Amino acid sequence: MGLSLATAERWVERWERQQQRYAVDREERFTVIADVVEQAVAGRARPSVVDLGCGPGSLAARLARRLPDADIVGVDMDPLLLELARTHHADAARYVDTVIGEEGWTRALELDRPLDAAVSTTALHYLSVDTLERVYRQLAGLLRPGGVLVNGDHFPHDDPGLAELAGRLGRRHAERRQAFAHEDWACWWTAVAEDPELTDLLAERRRRRRPPATTGTGSAACLSVPAHQRLLRQAGFRHVGAVWQYGDSHVVVAIR
Image (cartoon, rainbow, N blue to C red; front, side):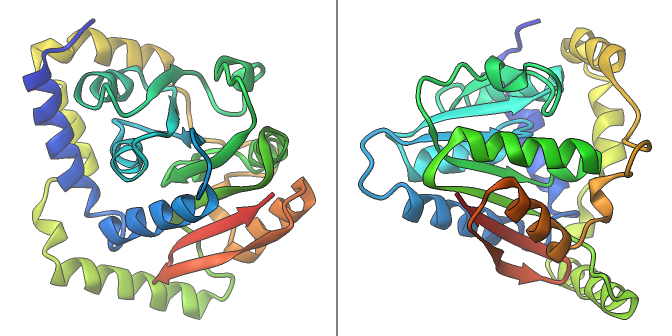
């Protein structure tokens, strides 16, 4: 199921444009995440970093450019996105096909030492709250003292009025950047389905696909920043808080 470099480049470039519709100030958010990791690993010869829900390698590639000596592991369960990452960003990371939060997922990372940083962007909200709690505890166990978890995502406000205002701010910002001129998520996947080089990978993706978390305590997409802070402190992180925000888009940092 190997891809040509030209095919991978084309689809990753379209992915980058498409994602601008959904992540407010996406490039700035990536920069903030990289800034935090750079500070956390300063002075360490070969820092160890894991990118949770790496997709086609967008964040891993940016971290690799900022930290060329880092050992980066990209983790995802989507075979198509992982193959795009392996082909287009082959040198950025070692990519692992596993389901975050499921039994044995941390062993699949094959880490040879404690992590200096774990990062994620627009991915962990797909987990159930129960799974997210477990993943936070597991990450606290994998990170060295002083290591960081950095998560860039949409975090809804607890106050309905603020939630509505934050959503409008994000949309207005995207409109000014003409982000809505790009194809959306659904159109990107529809176009992918028409590329014969991606047929096998898309079939494997459909075979594995599972519905969003709807059982137990529900989806983590409903959790506000304060709710994440409570879970992270319970998991063993000492210092937790948002270091960047625009509308409902935040970068939350937790220090082990």
